[in-house]
Length: 391
Image (cartoon, rainbow, N blue to C red; front, side, top):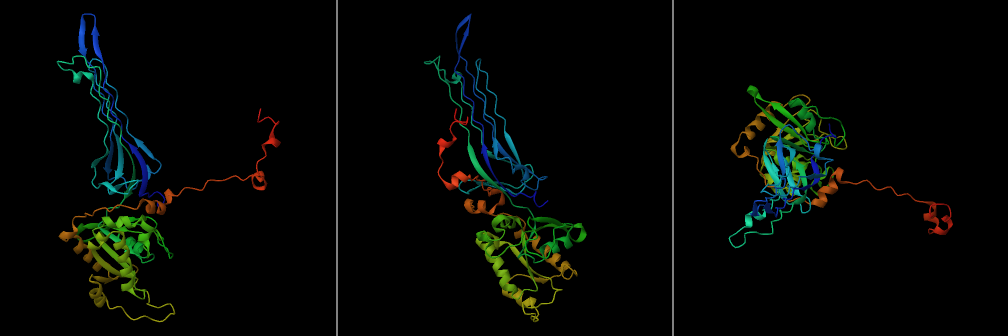
């Protein structure tokens, strides 16, 4: 399933060009002066994005590098209109954001199911010479050409839609927490970067209520500059209403680790700092020891909360300590009026940086065959004459 999660594609799109109008003068045995009757050209097809809640990845577009609508047909005689080009519908999951593939500028986004966004509009069909007849020009011998097609290379990025996003360093206990509070089964192991793709889970709350939680792959210092998993998954945090920071209790300086995570989010997009934040200190069941094995002092959670200005809650996914209190705090934040609408302006992306960071954008090195003759001396074609290939 991890290999099937594709949240980045770069494709070339082209709409259909409009059909040319017809230049025709009507001729009949008993109607010698029938006049102009050239029909209009058909409209070119458009490239349209369609939101589909049944899709959760851009996998179906990974190998579809060229998407083109059909051209409009030419007009005909007897004022017959050309056939309209067929629109090309691109099904995308909700939360897809589209950028210009050359400049990185934001183009549009699809957030709702069945939402339709015209990415490239088809060209209008040209008018036939029937439209240009006048009292002084009763037989115009010209028609209008169709509008040209529009073409563009676009980058599509999927930013998952979730109420709560888990933010933390690798091995902070994010996947374990998600597996405890929901039915999700993320991969859990004792090595960094176990989670390579975002995982979603529905967290059950009291009285049949629930909310969606997303496990974002671990962030390291310098992630906003492309280090670690880089920018690949920082984009998913933009869609979350509440950010749940997780720092393990075994850390020697919890506040410092929290501030590093906060700086990485600020470098990526300063608007992320306006979101509601909660800090969960995980793994409280594990003894606090430094690198030399000495016991660290106990954590003063109230004092830490006052220093950083957000709620700080101790939790243990293994024993269940603090899980209910964490759910209550998240539910209170989610129901605040300022956290109801998830709106964020999408800043332009650095195309060179994002493409270097994406695995699918890395091309395999071409194999180069080295002949012994090429290494030892220059090619001497005379020695190969007369053996058939030069005849």
